[in-house]
Image 1 (cartoon, rainbow, N blue to C red):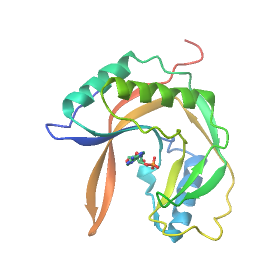
Image 2 (cartoon, rainbow, N blue to C red):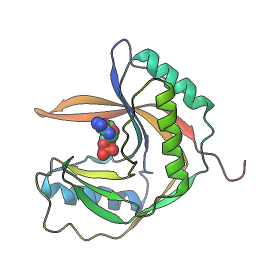
Image 3 (cartoon, helix red, strand yellow):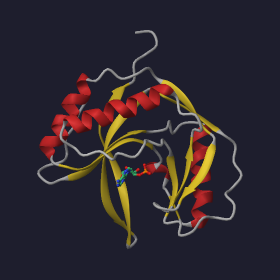
Image 4 (cartoon, rainbow, N blue to C red):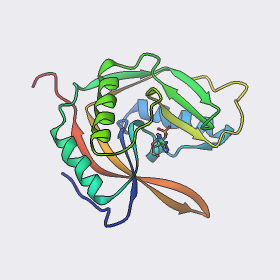
Length: 190
Ligand code: 2AM
């Protein structure tokens, strides 16, 4: 099902994997994010995700074209991954958790979506794709040590297209993600 609440103006769009919020794995991920918040600003539970492709500011017409193209996509099979590496990026000032060895299906899905975005006339970054979950933002300097954690496993059988909407929360600027569409990854038994 697809609902386009975009009206006229441009909105910031991205494709992402949303972790299953039910269960121990998500609880541990949310806990780790809140733990990493001591170094900057924790990412709220609602916003924890793996970006697949960032589309930037997109018009309603472009968003319709992206959705139409996604309907035609033949995505890879559902996959599992293990978040087992915690790190810090100085450039974006974030602490992240990532799979040390991303599954092939994840990398090919990200490549498909990047090609789709380019076909829709949306510029894409040339740097290599590094799948990760951002746990904390505005981390001014590299923490001397990062929290201890146990690796976390997730299974994904859908991917989604999201709008990132700026919101003001208690005087602080934040973002809220609204799902524009969701598509299944191919089932092993199809
Ligand atoms: P992240 O994946 O590191 O968390 C919405 O802005 C999402 O798209 C965020 O999750 C963000 O970072 C990701 N993203 C990737 N490239 C981006 C860019 N150039 N500008 C803003 N967000 C970007």
